[in-house]
Length: 274
Ligand code: NAP
Image 1: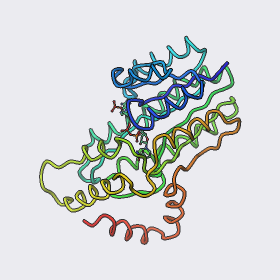
Image 2 (image 1 turned 60 degrees about the vertical axis):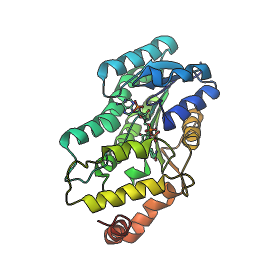
Image 3 (image 1 turned 180 degrees about the horizontal axis):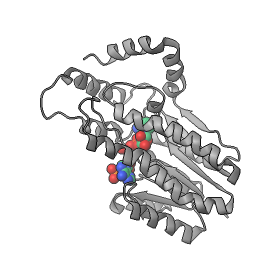
């Protein structure tokens, strides 16, 4: 029986490209989103559609139950939904950082918990978590986002060891910049209501974000490039524990180690003048 695939956050970007790639590969593909109207067109491409908000327990339970009823189990779970909360650490509200963790970490973990019992019974399954190069290196004004993506490194490492004996694989994708809605969503979260001590940092963060993601920016990946790796991870008989996708993802962590804390801090201070 072909592995069924459940993907979160398919309204745009990497999730949408991944749903299309799995459907094209001929696997039963469940594309999900918070709002069904944002993914309606994916059914014409062969996807089955599910409403799923990773911060809503009942929608997660319902979605997993539907796939299990129709296909026997979730063969592969692609935990893609996520966004970046942009704010200096002093200014990020506790409500905003909780929401950031609820979406990027706790929702993802909860979905793993929901699909694992059936995967264990069958002795098969793959969980692909969409991490980031932002889980390997840190820049200022996005600390909350980095916290969540660093968490996915630990979460994926622990889970992988725990479930390997049940025949279940856990894979972490670590892409660098991908051409999606991501920078726009991040920019919209930056607190700007009153002038404050971090205005210079916020301005340089906005500039770096805009220039890194502008059309033609060097090294920017297409969502399809990440989708291709997700398909490879799910269809491979021996997937790797992590896939670094893009040049920055491959080399920036090494540079970070090489220059040490002082070197990295100076580099960041030069990139993000306050
Ligand atoms: P995107 O185009 O903004 O897509 C984010 C997706 O997540 C959207 O479908 C969004 O749905 C969904 N989402 C947000 N909160 C959700 C929730 N509570 N429940 C379900 N879905 C939710 O950005 P993207 O670049 O494709 O991001 C996908 C993943 O890749 C994220 O985990 C991101 O951290 C990671 N990533 C991105 C980059 C990059 O440079 N773009 C690099 C490395 C890693 P709505 O339309 O409903 O908001």
